[in-house]
Image (tube, rainbow over all chains, first blue to last red; front, top):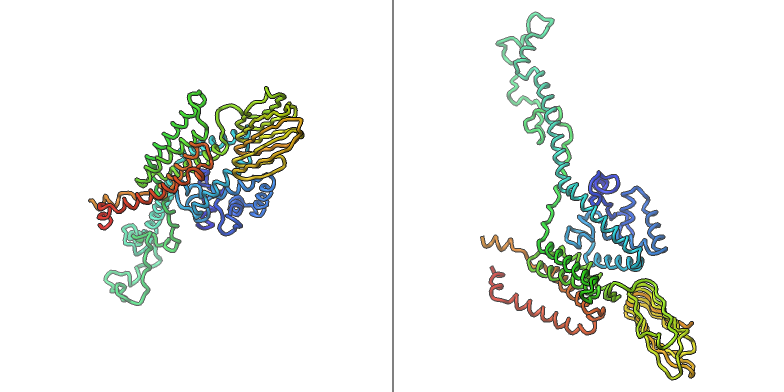
Length: 456
Length: 72
């Protein structure tokens, strides 16, 4: 696709209509990585270097620039592409970005979003705003018609204008022909015979019976008349033959793919199952983890995709399946369960009786303070702290023997100075204590986040 | 007429089949609640399942009816 085409179809200067179809294109000429900055600079008339600097600064201060760039890579089509990489994953057209790279970028985007936004208040407004924006955009697209319909309207208007011009050219040509002496029309003959002349009789070559001296009907060496162009097959507008041919009509867009019935039925069942499972959790009908809810919806998508694939259809379910897979994995890693146990919590037991066997927090920050816990000599106290998403912090006294094991599915472990980070980390540390005091056996588990045990 | 019907018949989507199997595997992870289930307890089942799937495909494509259809 050429630069000229993009200037006409993309960017803020493009004609009004569906904003999604007027997205800037990623530049293939001015690119350092994927051409996002080059395409944005071209569309908005800004130096791409400034946009690149903005991406770098935003990446350094918070990482938001990386997320934006990856989203631009996923959602903006490149020069020459039919659709963006994300849309190509959904089977809506061709993109130069390989599917494997697009899936990788999607994972990077999700990880960046998860690392940037907490599960608390700032996250859900963004989700709600995104859903509302998508719904509004789809409604506008439905009202404004699809791109193919708009192109058809433009072609109709062009044809109407051309028809009007043709009629006016035809009328002008008829008038011009009628004025010519060779036209042979009655009006012309009458005009020529009645025209005022300074001579008493017509010239000898116009007299009746005068034989023509030159036979014009034969090939006499006079150059032949120019042939009319294709747009004037009747040759009625010779005065316009030297005009350039009209630009060819824009190519008709490919016919939209018919939506698969398997995909629609599957998505309907997915929504029903997910809604029923969620309602059951809130109503207390069953004890199902949120990972189980997502896995149920994903299983329905997988079965629908399996049935559709055997019939050569249903590929529109791949996109929702990837999304549900990421959600399922994230919820499985955290292990979030139930509807309570979120926020900041501090526990400070002082006696063996008040020490619970387990302290659990679904999401947020949990702190267990054992500094004031009485540990009699010869006794062994055991407890566990589990924070499924967030930070677990335990403060132990210096003079008590402690056997502590810190585990995390994804995140960082800082267990009495022993630090590890990454996936599936486990650190076991023993702290010797005074013989006058007992022993504390402690297990700290964080699904996704940070587990910390320190002396106080 | 039969030729036309055969041409109109859609082919099986291999990509769709592959993704559906991946999604089922990820769903099993969600049902167990153990993120590492696929790489620990389920490893032997995954390998056995893949071998079985390949065997079923070989058997299916070797059926006499499908061979005759391919020749035609």
